[in-house]
Image 1 (cartoon, rainbow, N blue to C red):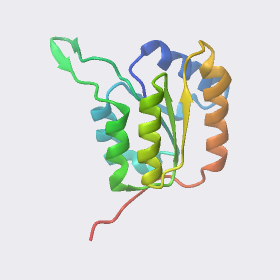
Image 2 (cartoon, helix red, strand yellow):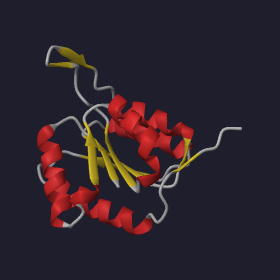
Image 3 (cartoon, rainbow, N blue to C red):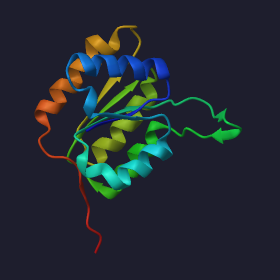
Image 4 (cartoon, rainbow, N blue to C red):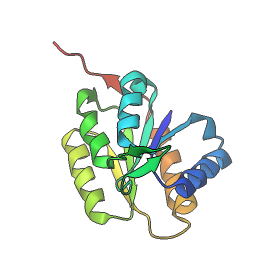
Length: 149
């Protein structure tokens, strides 16, 4: 499973199309908020082979009269502390500082990660998809939940 955190619907659609072109679209699950992703990971992390995390999920918004707090990619990064790191994380953002901070935290946790500065309109096809394919070839084991004594 490829778990993606991204709030921009155009980016999500482009990622889906890119994964579809590589016959990987069925493995994609995406979240537009960090809390929703963390909740899903609690039940499904054993199936995750790769994560791609955006850092800036935008300001809170209203949907059906309810305030949606998206959180940030760093919220998911910190939430990963409760698991054994056995899959890679791609950080995709146009915010270099957030990319660096998330990368430092992931490295501290022992999680293989790579950052990607998303400036070009074709970054998904030209940079992100090749990195996803490369990481999936290297990742043979999913996350394994840590046991608590």
